[in-house]
Image (cartoon, rainbow, N blue to C red; front, side, top):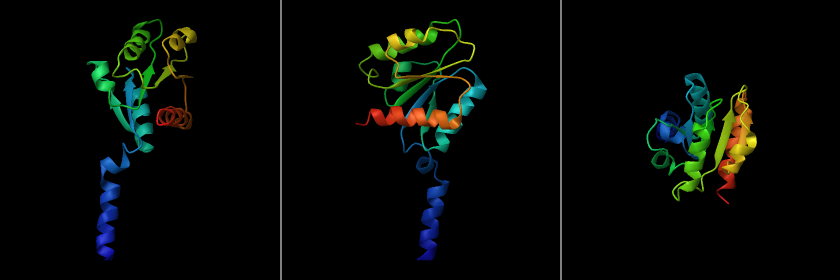
Length: 143
């Protein structure tokens, strides 16, 4: 009996599927490798599955996620256009978008909100701040 329980617990703690992903799936759109690692490790530590956008079709990649985190690029409309594309598609228009802006990014916050993003954070951010926003946004769409 004890051996059976130990094997079950050992399987739970060693199973990636159990530890990551049971709170939902988050797509991370971030070019900076260190920031991308921060987002993914933080999400996975709180039982979210993190998928990295690989430059392919963003709509197909995002359609089964519960949230999209988009890190902005200073002086670039690329990410703003990405948000517009997500909102224009029937497959992804319901998915919340969290914008994370670089400290030096002086983009107009209102431009992002005009694309119906759900939340906006400015770097540097803490793990606690990131997880709080992610949980709020993911849970808001479950209602």
